[in-house]
Length: 248
Image (cartoon, rainbow, N blue to C red; front, top):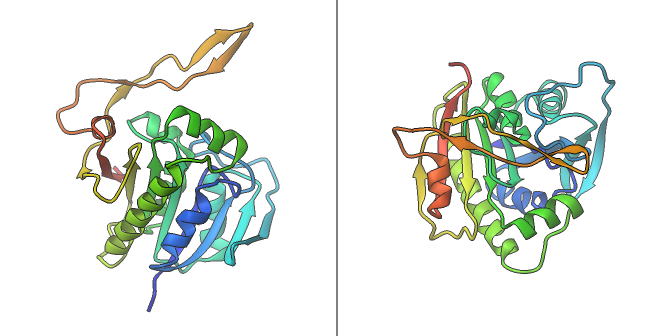
């Protein structure tokens, strides 16, 4: 019997990564997609406590798909409680951009969607991919796949993600664990894939003054780590995974 997976993300239904990712996961499982109606990056574990949320069925490449006009955590909570309570795992991603380092990782909507699944006791996975800046802007701002090598790298990463999920879905469930997986720029199936730890990092200045406003600018300040970290892996061109226990 094929497993059944819930797919969510924080980039929303218009993410140019979602069709490829869903197609590859559908090769190993039956899938249900429940994602935000609009982009919800950097929203972390937020819930829409003071808002009435709408669940809408969507026409999405012949997959069973829905949107919620809320956060990634809203999506997964509603999905697991009202749409598909009997699934074998929750898969979030593939995110447009990396998700590395603690405590900054908890700001990620991608990671938080997986953490919501893990908090229910489901096998949970968060997948993210580092991009060149010009590709990142086109994917995130304009919701389109740019010309060039990115589509190929995304297909390779999605195939690896499906292989990874299939392996752990078939093993005994480690409750409370989020598998956080990051792919580097130019990922292919020949790229080394290493287990690592989330880099420990201090808070950094995330806003810069510009034209009288404070504008967000991604920054992370790793501190001394005693083991191989996710940042080191990506910087060296390796893909990597960490198993993070949200109940500790």
